[in-house]
Length: 609
Ligand SMILES: *Cc1c(COP(=O)(O)O)cnc(C)c1O
Image (tube, rainbow, N blue to C red; front, top):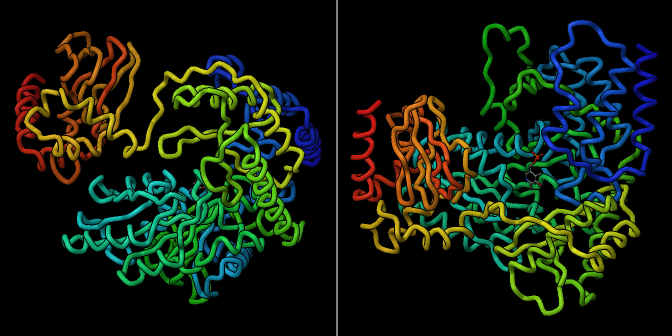
């Protein structure tokens, strides 16, 4: 054991301290298969060989998110003590689900949660749980709010998010059975913040229509721009109306540890729940997320179930079974790495590192603002800076996008650093997220120098950018006008009918739906030709204006439906209008003339199966 451990540590230290490596090395699926596709080994392999394979064929093709010039997405720069904490938890195979089996790790988790509550300004009797990440924290929060305020799922519940909210909230709503007409995506103001008035109006409109406004997710560091919603006012809007206010502070929340950050996060503590990601700005190795709930009993009431085979592990009054505070029964101790790394470095080191990131972001923003080569695309906030380069004589949006995307690609190609991009109100922006404790001012300057002067690389932007539904809605309307299925609708009705639809492209030869699968999207073909097949039989040919998928999309009852009864394959490249799972029923209900046409086709088609 010792020998294997020493060799592993030696290899890791060499790997982690090799700063000649780029932040990202991509590889094709074919190359990875060539390197790694092998049957499960029947016989033992020499451990050195196994380790060597990992370092030769696997790890080079994983991003180095802790690289000092990794400014893409949300970087995570873990620490060695944190990783050793994970090793200990893993080697001891700590089960941190029940107090009975893990009094030590459970108390450690309470300690760590206690620190977080203290930093945030939450009451000491608030509850919390460490989870895989903020995606898990967000879905757990939504489930907790629903159980607390409404009990089982019902059609009247409505949730609210600003359009800068993280996609994990949309996924949480989907997972928990919210349909498209139960989620209000609200527009944000010029500084990308959800305004209290917008939220109040949306909630009041739903109350007036006898729906039950349930949950509003507000951002304390939106992933796109770092923007912080006016938390204090939004929490007030929610409190007055009995709506659960959830603060998604996943990446931004730990900025409260610095003076600068705390000033920007005023009102964070007023949320009914808060999602945090220690694996982002608290420098923990993946995975480590956290959900805090202001009401100390809410999580347990929402999630606790005690079957007979777990009665032995029931906790006493002042003990906590963390498995009863969320989804996971079997769970590792994530507290261990947090506790170890905080002790190894001391909290001041974390404060200093966070403060330095904020300073570096201000430095970057200052440089960008004062340089005629660049334009800032959003006010910089919590370590995120969105900008783009100007090019003499170029003001066409598509051309600016092409060249800026070319700069992002050129930087990656150079191996010097990595940034990513986003879209703000439909306009392309380069996005710099400065969170790593390893980054210095020189690192920031080297990347900005590069972007100011480099030749854009050639990039192919022909692959459709998946736009936010509100952004693509206008173009859909134009496309949908000529469709026979919607010919009976006025322009307004058409806009409403297609509001929940997205556009999707499919390449020639690819399958759109496969027989027996249980997907439930409904499709209208905007462009291209497709075939409906069962086994080798050609059932139908489809062209522009035709629709398909209605059989599986129509609800049979209680959310159940037919599986797909045929294959649909693209004969040419296709452009599709996709009505996501569950929205076809709304369409049919709200637009009876469209409904008649779809039902007629459905009954004719089901007869042929
Ligand atoms: C990263 C992030 C999430 C998702 O968290 P994961 O840990 O990736 O699951 C949610 N919300 C915000 C604001 C984030 O930055």
